[in-house]
Image (cartoon, rainbow, N blue to C red; front, side, top):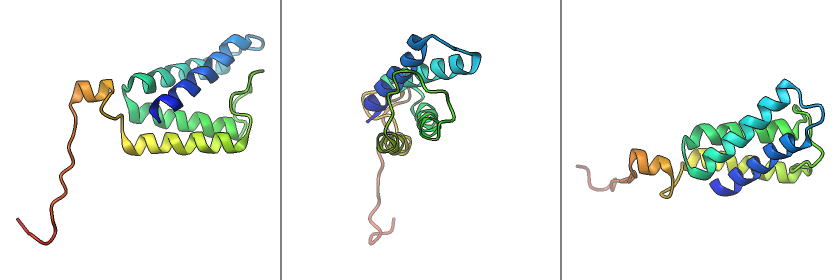
Length: 119
């Protein structure tokens, strides 16, 4: 999931940069932040932050808060809704075992104690 959201963000951000015409300051900032958050998701670094940013980009794209490039990656509302749900799932699930976050901060094991045997 992390890779799918990351790749789609990088492609959307590059579509802004390649489009080129009428590339104002706000559009440039959006494009750079989309590529950066997509790259962060791809390598699994600062995953919760990058996934929240991804969700905001998907919602902003769905509600037309941002100017659309010529090659709009998320044209259909259903596609945008699905990408937003995946970004929310990445925020809740975390980076996973194969990520820089896991390498830097260690893997965490969740231990669920049996409620019938108090300790």
